[in-house]
Length: 128
Length: 176
Image 1 (cartoon, rainbow over the protein chains, first blue to last red):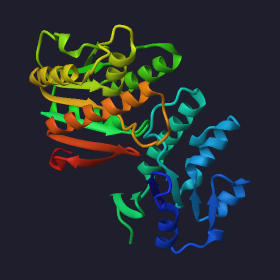
Image 2: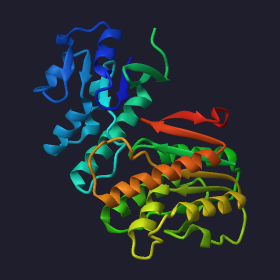
Image 3: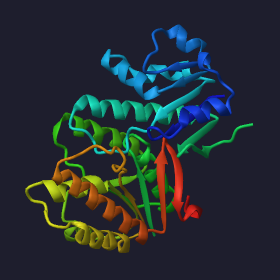
Image 4: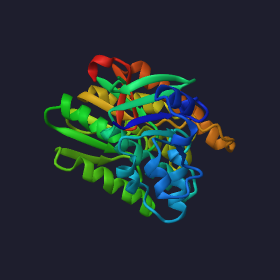
């Protein structure tokens, strides 16, 4: 089952997700540092999805192609669409593509958890 | 009835707003579009929204500013106004806009729309959380949209935020 953690920056999403799913560092891929598809394939959790989508857009790749790769993983993403719409087209595209991808992940996820101040709010499903 | 749907960019607000209209307005649905079709990106966004609405029986009226001056000439079951952030930007930044405090005029226009239908759904935006420094005009816009959203939510029967396409009720949960 896919579980999505969403929330503003520095809200304790990563720590909450790792504790909730009893994960250790070696099972977590970092969107900002990920070097290969294999790293993502073997990881149980993808942290910083928003940094991975940004890196993909910088390379001219479509973030939506990530969707099948995220199946049955714990996915953590910053909510980046709640600010002023930026003047720079790339910045707008990043927010748009990341937002749409999160909508798609949420659609197939069994559980979506919004994190404020380190506290979980279940907005879809529950955890066993 | 007034329902307010808010959310960040690309959070699935429009689809939920349309669902609300389809639920509460059996026929005669009006889509009130406030985004001016300037540039390719705005046109693509408008086309995307148009495709979403396709087959749901919406008439479309484009209205960019001075909401109280809009005379629809007939009643509708449902009106969907999309979106408040564009309407306010048009008032505050376009040469023909009202410039000074746009809030009273917009609220008056919303009340008029509410009286012209059984179910009014207003889409607005969450633009308040990036914490970046902005020029004084943008700060005024953020401040005004915040006050507008607060006033709308007070008038509304129901308010929900769309998060990753999931509707999170914050007022009148029974309406969702």
